[in-house]
Length: 514
Image 1 (cartoon, rainbow, N blue to C red):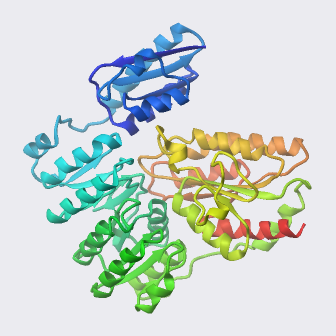
Image 2: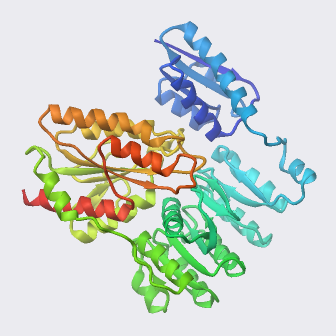
Image 3: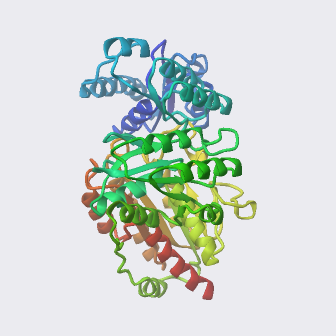
């Protein structure tokens, strides 16, 4: 095994772009592993963890590009460097966008540009966001690991400038018909969303689309916006923006539980809003919301249903013809005595949260890396315990890597591990679609699903794999194509997270009675 680092001095590229290129490089088969990134301490730590960091990489500065590879021979390492630059050139030629050296340069060429998308290492993101805001640009910041004090400062600056500061750690937004970040494409309509919940926003967006309605704008806030420290600055700005938007008739707010002081601010803002508003704060204080005369939802499906009904003035029936009890009974007959537990491995953090709420209400004891209480928190996120829900998009799994919805390799490995555990009966997987996401997530997982179902059968067990897709028929991956690939792999398909978890609960209850 040979490991080499190639350092390109003063060559900057976007972190997500580099992660995709590293994945493409591995897919060529030339190298066994690759990590490509700027020479920041975090990237070096990741390369070290992967046993890919050499002396040259250690000496690189944060302004330098490191190409770290391992291969069977030194010649293949050298070949990988050449292949990387071929891939880089191909990617550069494939786009027709103009390139600029600075935000000021962009504004000088086109003063009508009003949005900056920032995806650089966290330690540099705040500086770039400040430049954008000072130049009159709204900001969508995908970058994470930005200090809290910088977030507060930037959001206050945005307020002074009458601008939106979406993020840090903003997964997606849908602005004037443009899908930004890890976002699905849906039709335009009169339903507006604001949320600190990426997969939650996307679920509501795609359900609204599926039933023939559309989205005016969906504004992401970043995960810390609803904290006491930040105080919901972007959430409150988003409410005002949608209230003043002539294309928006109905508004939904989606988030994990806000801090109490922030909840009070948001509730007061909603009470003053002239438009109809639905609030869904996952595992939040719904009694307080209802006591203030505000419409409140318990699930993403319910949120979608409520906003569609408010938009149309008509009753909307969400289809669900599943006989959960019959499916559960049929699966139970096939399990070996050792098989006792389910394992959910989810890309969508808010989908994991929604499932945990349902499981808690059903009385199913469940452990998680994003548990609501310490008693059910996994000691080690890389090791499941009994019934387990894993948010594999959590920072423990994405440190120095692209999100698993972009690069699914980490989840494939975790799936295989769970599938081979003799105590595992059920594995649940979600699949997120959108322009910036993995181009064919179903294919990446399908072979592993087929192989592990076969392995289970050969070892006297039966593996139930449940899958959902969060996406639309307008996404480049092709919803129907992804669905067919998963069905061909032998999964039980459900079209929403709630339905998938409902089936898991039916099976888990029978497991407890064994």
